[in-house]
Image (cartoon, rainbow, N blue to C red):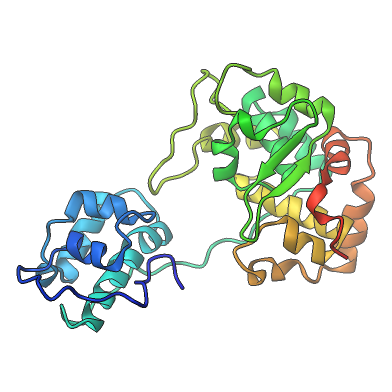
Length: 301
């Protein structure tokens, strides 16, 4: 079932006689507290469903996500709105919505960094960013997981850090030298990774890229083309696939589904040989990657 789909047992209370609003519809679908729905309801919850057409939806989209990409608007605005209205249409409470989503351009392919490029990037980064980059190269964590990681999730004695997974949490043992670096940033802070001014990263609606300016500057100093933190996760996935195999990557990457990891099922022999050889180089990023231990993968063949 999709994130914003109505529950199968959704029924309409016979006592409801007033015009159904977007807020009321979300409550009937039991999705009013789900991601992205809350923001939509807070702003436009009192709008009657009968008034929601293409013109209204476009104006609402601009009001909520004026600077967001088409993909973000599609995911955070159009998907929950259309799902709610479809559910009400099936229950006979409104007409089937005739809403056109924005065109989403094909995203650019993720970039693979060689160990030498990754090392240059880390060395060219500010300390707060360098710690994030090394953490992703060790664990394959998503940007949101990096920004939200709390100190209670990191055992500074054993180096164990717990990351979420669709089939249960994964526990990773970080190298002691890196744990010391993480713990020494600001022990009293609730989050492991903070902005350089000592404040936690604030969640952003639509724009993302809490440190994109710092990352862009680091890439420029390292003589690399602009990249994102997801490129670092992609780099980790290739390194991990070459080192540990595809089956372990599927588990370790905590993908939404196996299709997300399928791109790593086959790698060219030249890439495998080249990257595998480079991972044995005496570089800090290679050393941290090699010494990271995945406790939950011991039984995965």
